[in-house]
Length: 506
Picture 1 (tube, one colour):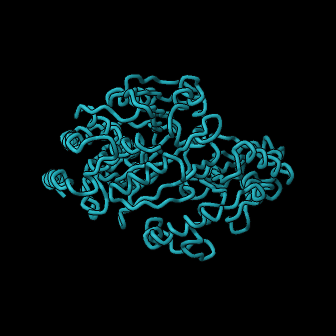
Picture 2 (cartoon, rainbow, N blue to C red):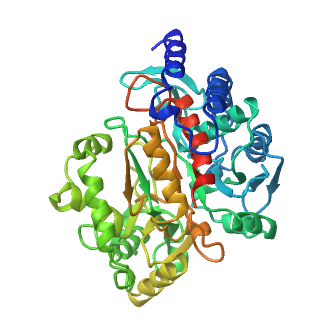
Picture 3 (cartoon, one colour):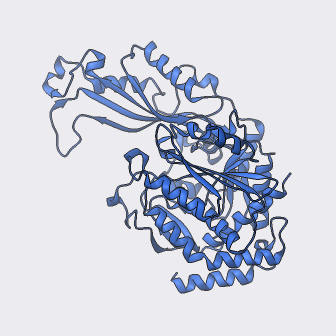
């Protein structure tokens, strides 16, 4: 799709929305006022796209200590430019956060969670440079931006900012006040985010909100539907290390491999320790005390999963993942139940000895496994790590070091909360089929909002589409050629509508 056809499409949509679901205001705004907002979104299209491209070209990668302090400083400017009257950088032991407030004089306040950091990338794996933020035509999708952070999370967040810019340009006062909190360590499991949220002025502002959303763009390209998650698994990231020095056996450094006949091997000891954490097939966590603490899914949660399974495509999921079978050849619905209820231990990477071309006859003196665990209710980060330590010690692996790099517990929100009801109502008015799902298999630090002392509803919301998070060729749809998926402009309008619905939902 060329740029001219995209302009024609936007003009056509602008004229066609009268009389469709898109024309109906969320609540409390006249049709002429909403028309002005839609016109402002269309007029600001190029600026919104340029804003997203600039953001992608300025990466902040906590894992590489890259893009700081530029990342939080840019996030602060984005908030101020979008109409937040106050925006400040909040320090932590790690990367700083950004706290911003927009007082519209409204009765209700909505919390917004942003992340300004992105995952690492290898440019050699990409079809287009990952920081070029190039606009390309993607068959079946339309015009998309390709770049690291395009969908996770800068594209959806830039779409939300586009909604605020349009309201300002149209001379409309927001129907709700906003509290924005952005962090720069989400991609390393948010090790210091709690410091930022518990700053008294930040916590006080969040406490006044009806809940917190993270903007998303997860419409299914096959159906156009969205899945609204009522929770998410927690995550703990850590390294397990065996060294000859700490073990008291094996070499202190790499030695000639012929010595294996009489010298213990740290890599083999690490393999032995890892094998105690899961069943032989690697699919069931066997750390002492973990399974006993897992809260089973409720009948309602299983019902929601069955409904989601009936309205989603197993074939599409397998194709996207590049897999042919699920564990134990289970059914689609069974796989979704397991995805929601099962804690996991995953090996992200193993590091030891020589990894270059050809062989090198060494017996390594050190071996490390990069691990992440996904947690479900009623597991917590602290208790899980304590159980892991006790499990290893009981089996004689007290020398195995545990270096925790980040993590948090699972999150859960009541489907009857005003926040979720506002999300469902907005989807219905936008003509987007919504399915409730009990829990994301992925993770975000929502428990910092849903847990004490804030105890707020929290979740993901938004329209549009993108894919490739954490992978090469990540993209976000700007101008959609798929009639079932909203482009960036219409997704921005969806956020406007949502704000009005939040204001109207008791």
